[in-house]
Amino acid sequence: MGSRDNNMIDDRRDEEVLRRLLERSGQPAAVPPPPDLVTRTLRRLPPEPPAAAARAAARRALRRLVLWVALASALGSIGLLGIWSVIGGGPSLALMVGDGVSGLSRALLTLELLAKPLLRTAGMGGGLLIAAGLLALAGAGWVWRLLLRRTPVVYAERVV
Amino acid sequence: MEQQAEEIGWVDQALRGDRAAFGQLMHRYAGAVYNLTYRMLGNAEDAEDASQEIFLRAYTRLESFDRQRRFSTWLLSIASNYCIDRLRRRRFSWLTLEDAAFSLPSQERGPERAALDHEQQAAIQRALQKLPEHYRTVTVLRYWGDLSYEEIANVTGLPESTIKTRLHRARHMLAEALGPEEQTLWEAETTI
Image (cartoon, rainbow over all chains, first blue to last red; front, top):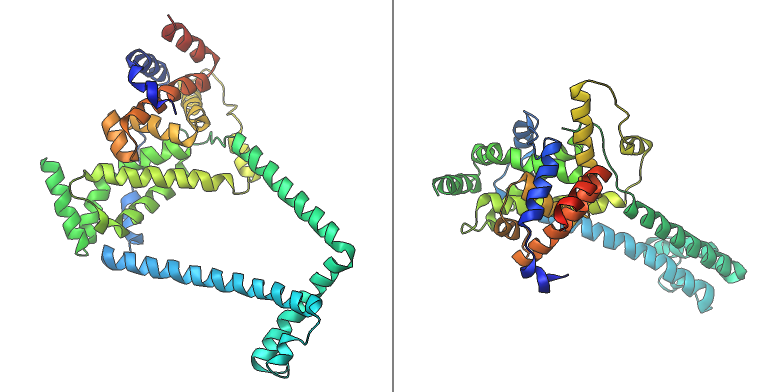
């Protein structure tokens, strides 16, 4: 990042010139914070001391993580069970652990039935279309991200 | 030194659960934090929301505050990291029509001095928003926070040499972003 030659940089002149340019616009100027900023922030502070508040925040973060992992696992098992039941050809996993009417067996059967139409579509020649659709979606997402990165969002309102 | 001792006293009280002591710290640094967030994020609403979040983070992380450091440096490092994270998240959020309207340059014109001032200030904000986040951070800390290279290095956790390089480039970028007139002046005065 050019740090090899930064000891050679004499920026005193640049510094002075930029300060003069800023002064033309009355800058740098301090912006007064909203008068009730501290009061409102105080109201939002956790009731417990900082250490306890940090532990509570960590617990909340862990709960969120567990929830996401559970959700991802559920979606993953839908896919895996679907593949098993469509491609595997063997007996349904759900029927191996019960009669499919209650308990774990019923839950597995539900997941299998949810996944089946998706995988059948993919198996009937729709796979290419699905792949093309996903590719187009990823491409559009990439272009959108690129455009946003290059477009500075400038807020011209309430400028001090 | 006296100020630092006073702040460490407030930190100790806050760690024992005295929220009013933390309030004293907030009163002292509300201006610095708000100005940093305002220049980094570009608008008053985001700056206010960010300032509150930064103080909340500082409160929950207060135990990690190293008493060898200055409280202001520690707090501003939380603030600058938060602003950079927020700017990154903003890139991935949908642009609403309202945002698009804000992004248009102000059409305000007229002979009144206030309107002219407003236009100049808006130009500064627009120019700052054009700088990449890391360049904007060092620029705001240097010119609006009035920090030395060493202090900026402490806030950002970067070597002074990197700060110097980034500021060197940021000045060029800012002069260019300010407009053609400023750019011409810049080139005339910095090129021998």
